[in-house]
Length: 446
Image (spheres, rainbow, N blue to C red):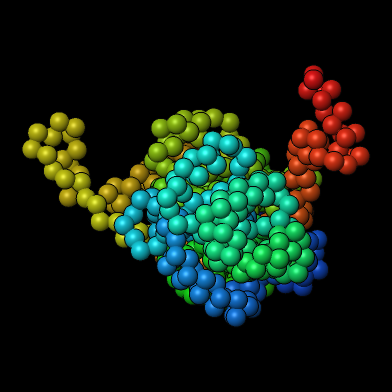
C-alpha cells in the first residue's frame, strides 16, 4: 500500500469508542458517493477517472508533450487554482522544487495566470526573452480574469514572435469540450485542444489533461501516475473500512472536539506545492455553510523555527497530519570535522534523511505532549505511482469527510463574491455591476 495511516499518536486524544460512534456516518457517506445520489453528484467523474479516461486523448497528451519538449526552452502553463496546483505539485514532488535549475533534457516550466501581479508577469516575460516558448492555457470557460489576462499577454507575444501560423503550433488549450470563449478561440485559431471533463471539478482535475500535459512535459511517467491512482481506486472505492475512510472519520471526530484547524506537515521541501494543492482541495470542498476544518500547512523542520512555538503552546484548536515519505532517493550524509566546533561529530556519517526522520519523531512526540493530536500518513516514495495513489487517497477522503461534515464537497458558491466585487470596481459593463460598484465605492470611502 503506497499510503498507510498510522494512528499511534492519537492515543489520549481520540478513543476507539468515538471512532466506532461516527462509523455509521462514514458508512452513509461512502454509500452516498458510491450511489452518486448526494449533493454535487454531477461532479463525481474523478471516481473512475483512473481507469475510465479517454485513451485517445491520453496518447495525444503524450505526443504533444514530446513535441513541446523538442520545440521550446520555456513552457508556460496558464491557469489558476485546480488548473495549475496539481501539475505544479506533481512536478515538484516527483522531480524537484528546483526543477528549472536542474540539468535536464526537458524545458523549464513556469506557471502564470494564478495572480494579477504585474511584477510576476514582467519577470516571467523577461525570463522568456530570447527563448523559444510554448504555452498551455487551462480554463474551462476562458473568461476567468487571472488566466485570461495572462493568456492575452502570452498569445500576443507568441503571435509577434512566430506569426499567427507559428503561434498556433505552440499554443495548447485545455478547456471545455464544446463551449466557452477559449474553445471558440481555439477552433478559430487552430490550437490543439484537450478536455476539462464536465463531471470533474477543478480541484479534482490533476488526473485529467489539466494536470497530465504539464506533468508529461516535465518528463514524468504519466502511465505510472495513473496506475497509482487506479490501484488506490481499487483499494478505496465503495469501502468504509479503509485507511482513507478512517482518515475522514478521524478528521471529523477531532473537529467535533474543537480541533478546527488541520496542519498538514511534511519534512521535505518538495512537498510544499502538494500541500498547496491539498489546501485548495479541502478548503474549497469543506469551507461552507458556516462549517469546515481550516487547512493549513508547514514544511518542517524549517517552520519549526517560526510556527513551532504556536503549534507547541498556542490555542489548542489544531491537529496535525504528518506526511512521512519513506524513500526519497537522497544520498547526502553529514561529514566529520576534526575540530568539531559545532559539536555534531556524533552525527558524522549519518544520512541526512535519517537525521530528518529523527526530527519528525521528536517533533511528533513534543507536539503530542503539548496537546496536539498527530495523524501520520506514511507514503512509500516520491515516485509517479505513489503521487497518483496519494492524490486519489486525498480526493476520496475529502469527499467522504465533506459528506460526513454535512456539506456539498463539490461546489464553491462563495468564490464568486470576490469576482463580482472586482468586476464592479473595475467598471465591467452591465447594470448589476454598476449598481454594485456604487455601493462598494461608498463602503471604501471613495
